[in-house]
Length: 262
Ligand SMILES: [Zn+2]
Image 1 (cartoon, rainbow, N blue to C red):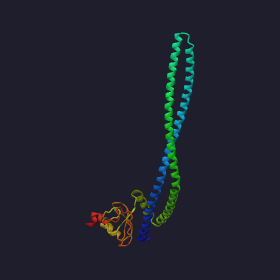
Image 2 (cartoon, rainbow, N blue to C red):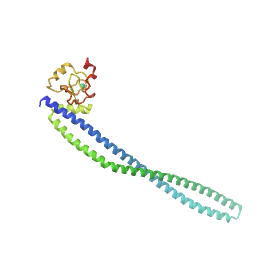
Image 3 (cartoon, rainbow, N blue to C red):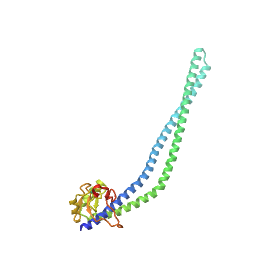
């Protein structure tokens, strides 16, 4: 394959890889939106289950306290009976003290039960809020999942076809060149640059004149000594032609390099 033909194929590969990058970014963007909602749902689920546990625990404690309160009531009744049946002041004093102490205990338990009741109510409110929010999010997720999944599937289909085009282009090019290409693509995000006038359009640095003179003959691909991209010469496109600069960091702005003008 002539170098001119290889350049053509390489340019196709670069264009395909740019589309692949855009598609891949698009897909992860869509996935990210779904993941964010799903993550919030899972946080809410954790909160709901914690609320349910603490409500169950508080209900149990409250039940025990109510039980204790009932027993205290019985005990107070018995102490009052003893007070009525007291035969001397010693028995009267003892029964009175018992009634008083048990009464204090009952007030304490009563207070705890009320406090627990307030806390339980608050936890139930929280739980209800979390459940409402969760169903809202789930409804939203169910609504958008279908659309977004469809979009992702479409994008993935396009991606598959682009990957096939990529393989086809790669198989036409020398494998050594392709290994360099893949390495550069991974490391720099773009692997190929060209030059129209001796300036690397990948990094905007002036190429050594000897190298540039060799490149004018288009006999092989070179390496930019600055950015190490695969570089080749093509004539500057005439106005009206599509000027797509593969891997250009500042799209075709050759005047940006001071060496280029001096
Ligand atoms: Zn360069």
